[in-house]
Length: 117
Image: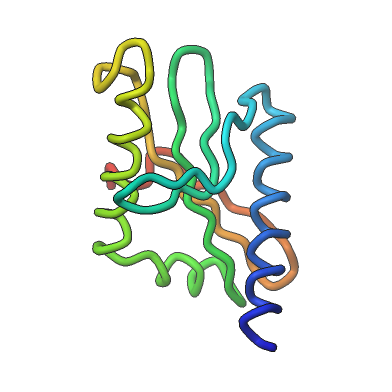
């Protein structure tokens, strides 16, 4: 049962983050996009830029951030590369990787360009 609860909590967190991006004029173009390398929770657009968003939910923002591993980042990079291959400018498409942290109260903290840090 806890797996099902976690699944629904994750979906709820993704929906909350998607609403934030949509309301800020960065429409979500894809949800749970899957490539051979892995899955990307949300993909949004800001003008010509593609934003890859990893959503992490836990009891606190710090605990959520700790759940993102280097290995997972590698899979996200691989999937993002696959996604960009289908864009008109391919790998030259402007892009960034954001991480959205969601705590137990549903508060969202977005770290833009998080993978560059």
